[in-house]
Image (cartoon, rainbow, N blue to C red; front, side, top):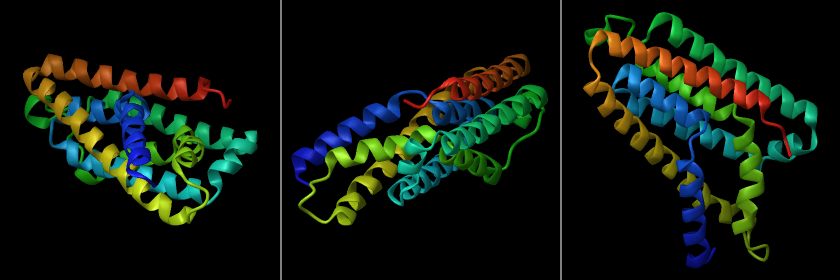
Length: 206
C-alpha cells in the first residue's frame, strides 16, 4: 500500500468513525451517565469489537452476510435486541454516578463487555469492512499483509474516536451533576440506545 493510498484510507476511516452510530451512541450514553471514567473501558470494548468484526469479515463472514438475507437478519436482530435491552435498563434503573444521582454505578468490566457486544454484533460493521477495505488493496501484492496496517489503523482510530466522544460527553455530565439532571441524562441515554436499536432493525441490506 502506497503512502497516498494509506493517507486516503486514514481520511476515509476518520470520516466513517466520526459519523454517529450505535457504538458512538452507547459510548456517549455511558459517558453521560457514568462520567469520564467510562472512557477507557468503553473505548477498549469498541476496539476489541471492531477487531472481532474485522477478523470475521476477512474470514468471509462479511461476504456470507452480504449474500444471505437470513444470516444478515439474524445478526441484525441480535444486535438491535441487545441495544434495546441496554436502553431499557438504563432508562428504568437510572444508571448514573453514585455521588451525583445515588444510583447504580457500573463496573468497568460491564461497560467494556457491553461496548464490545454492541460493536461486534453490528452487521453494518462487518459488511462495511468487506466493502471498504478492498478499495485500498493492490491485487498484485500479498493481500493478507496489506490488511495488517489498515486493520490496525482502523482499530486505533476507532479507540481514539470512542475516547474523544466519551471525554466530551463526560465533561458535559460533570456540568450537569444535579440529581435531577443526572436522571434526565439516564433517560435520554436510554432513549438514545432504544432508538439506535430500532433504527438498526429498520436498516435494510442493500
